[in-house]
Length: 332
Image 1 (cartoon, rainbow, N blue to C red):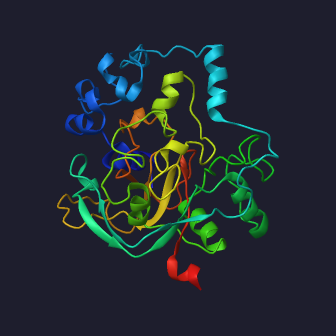
Image 2 (image 1 turned 60 degrees about the horizontal axis):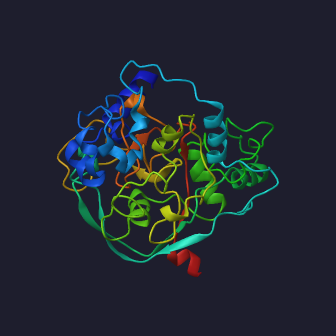
Image 3 (image 1 turned 90 degrees about the vertical axis):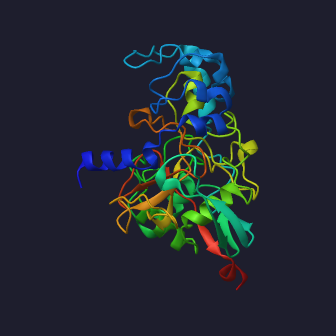
């Protein structure tokens, strides 16, 4: 599979989701007045009306197609390090044991949307049985316990089979679908389906984000947050954005890292927009990430109905995962 084919596949998928002006007006307020040309965030105009999502019009200064971005100042770099929330290797809030689980009750919920790209719709209602899902994304420290016990190969960013200094509670990255699947089985769990993931993030009222319908730059680790500082982005410790948790008490379901699911990339019921990418070749990812994907013109990836698809062997700095479990298994 060539690199260019994968890029093309991304551009056709939700990983390349360029938002329409109608949808931007729906969940980003006045931002739809300037982010309306299907090129967000490359072609943008400075406007105070966009403060709903970007907080300050100054974010747009110099961010024009072909413009060269100024190097961050020392003050910006220091602020960026505070945003990255690194702390001593010996300190961890969660420890190395598998994550605690949060219960999601049985019932119906709204999945997908009719307001954006064809593969995200049509909006429909699904019924799921009771299940449980990890409260947090799997961390570097937790994944290290797994590879230490099993001898599995360590992720690309590990050195001498351990994670970078200060990132024990950051989500593990550079993990493939196969890695995530193996970890969850080792922990006595499994990967969630895309529907289970979306319900845990979205609840039953069809909200766009875990916290509601309005995008909030301070409730998730998104590219917009790093752009405000003007410094390179990174992961953040899982659970760092308490105000961004879902109704079920699940954290980081918008931003931080894209999360592998167990679902193949398939059309939703009633979807008439067919693509050769549907089938049993690619697995679905959910949640968006910290990474600025402006090269792919994907816009804001934080809405919980967003989805992407990749080969099961794909690894990069913005892919991670969390686990789930059947209620019946936990009762036994």
